[in-house]
Length: 504
Image (cartoon, rainbow, N blue to C red; front, side, top):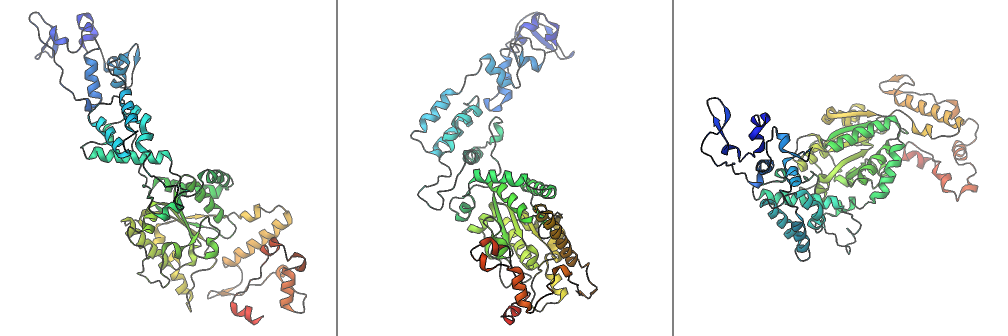
C-alpha cells in the first residue's frame, strides 16, 4: 500500500501480480522493482467460513493499486462497510435465490425439523453468501411448525403464539444444531441471535391460562392506566418495570395507606406486562383483596403455603411440576396486603423459590413486589403479646434487609371527589385516621391510648343507640331496596362477632 502511493507501475497491479514485478529487500524492509527473472504471486488460502478474511482475499485478486483498506472496499467511488458488500458490488458473489427457492420447494413435503437441518447444512457448507436474506425470506417456513396449537383443545384454543416467538424458538434450535457440529450462530454475524426468553410449554395448563389474555385489549387498557398514574405512582411503575426488564430480580415493598392507589398501580403493572405476553402472578393475603386484582388468587392458594406454618416450613411445590414451571416463566409476582401474613409464610415462599430457581438470591432471583399498610391488620397471633405480633410481622424477617421501600403518600380518593365540601370532609377524616394510626392522638401508655372521637362523628340525639346507627347509615332504606349502589356505599362495621350476636 505504501509503494502504491508513489504511483507508477505498482498502482496498476493487483496483490497477486505484485511479486512478478517487484522483489522484497529484507535488509531494507522495502520493495524494489525486479531487474531480472520473475515470480508467481500466491495468496494464502482462506476458507469461506472465515468471513471477512475470505472476502478480503477475494478483493485482493481484483482491486489494483489500493493505498488503504478503505480503497479495497471502494467501488465506483463508494466506500462499503464490509469487504463482503464490496464483493457483491463488484459482482464477485452471486445472490442466494437458488437456496431460497430450494427451501420453499422442500417446504411442500418436508417437516419443520428437516427444513431447519437443511438451512444448517447450507450454513456449514458456506454455501450462503447472505444468510440474513435467506433467513428473512424463509423464517416463516422454518418456524411455522413450532408451538403447534390444536384448535380443538378448549384449554389452549385461545392461546396466541406470535411469529416472533416461533422464530426465536427456531433460532434456538438452529443454534443447537450448529453447536452439535462445532459451530454457533455467533459465527454468522448477519443472522439474528435468539433472545433469552423461556420457551412456552404447551403441555402446562397453568402457563396456558396465563397466556390466554387478549393482548390488544390489554395494550389499550395499559396505555389508559399508565397515563392516569400520578407522579409517585409513575416513578414506582418505571422502577419496577426496569427491574423486570433487566431480569435481575428484586424485592420491593410499596408502602401507602388506604386510598393512595396501590391497587390502581397493581392493575397498571399487570396489564402492561400481560399485553407484552409476559406472565404476572397477582396474589393477596386475603380473599377480598384478591378479588380486586385481575385473575387474583390468595397467596396460600397460589403458592401452596401451609396453613400450620413454622420457622422451617416450605411451600408444597415440587420440582418440575406445572406450578414450579409456571413460577420459572413468571416475570413478576405481586403480593398485596403482605403485612397481614406471618413472616414465616414469606420466608417459606423464599426458600421454595430458591429451591425452584437453583439460586441463593432473595426469592430465587425473581422480581417480587409486595404492598400494604402496617397501620392496618398485622398478623393474627392467638393470645399473642405486642412483642409476639411485631416479631411475626414481615419487617422482622431477614428478607427485609434486601427490601427496597417505595412510598405512596397522595390520597387518590380526594382527587377523584368533585364536590369541594365532600373533598374537605374526606381530607379531614383521612388525616384524623392517619393520626390515629401513627399514634399521634391520645396519651399512649404501653401501647394503649384513649382517643377522643370528634363530635362531628358522633350521634348525640337518640333513644335507641342501635336504631340510631341504622337510621343514620341506611336513610330512606325502603325507597332504595332495589338499588345496588345504595348498599355498595354503606356498611356498618363491628370490632368482634360477639358484639353482633349480643345486639341481635
